[in-house]
Image 1 (tube, rainbow, N blue to C red):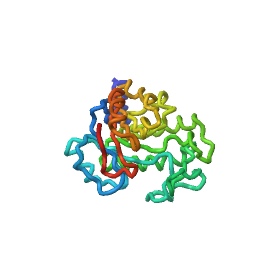
Image 2: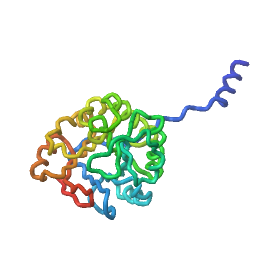
Image 3: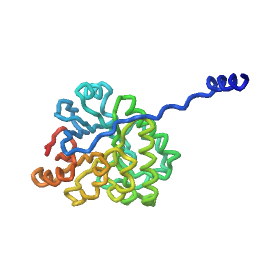
Image 4: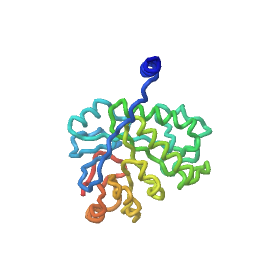
Length: 256
């Protein structure tokens, strides 16, 4: 009797563990209609079921509008670079800043080994995406190790950071995409829900992304230089959802 009373007391005093977060798990298909837009007035009327848009520049009301149309919303965030125009730019100490990103004024590579500093910043950013109702995050610049980053990053450093980013997103109920980082696709595809790639057809690298499709996860392909008549047949064969865009990433697009 006493043992039963103790067990009953424990049941009321020990807090139950939080249920694991669930998140959107998109399925691979070349037929996915999608749009990516970071500049200009956001056009929500585009015929698409997936929108990749800037997290800071998109409102909760706009995300809600997309949801009412049956579309999913992906929140763009740079997870591997410092951007001097962001509202939280002052949170990045000089100690975590590396070399300038070539061709991108105001951006610097981050020392992704410093999770003690970057983890809380990225968590706050992802929480902002979640509060607005986004379904997923598109964390950019996850390949600093493969660039002149100025802080000596290794492939192992990048793998550790990218897996932490994926786990962070999932813990907040957000799907997460792997942006570029083609050399680590095999290792990272199990941890991510989709891939976003720029110009794999132009650089003849699309085969490197096939592990995502093999796992039933979509590849969202963007081409800037190659015409749709050139890349679309191959992209469809690979099962990629491919579009042509201008590098400004305005509302303009051409679909396959």
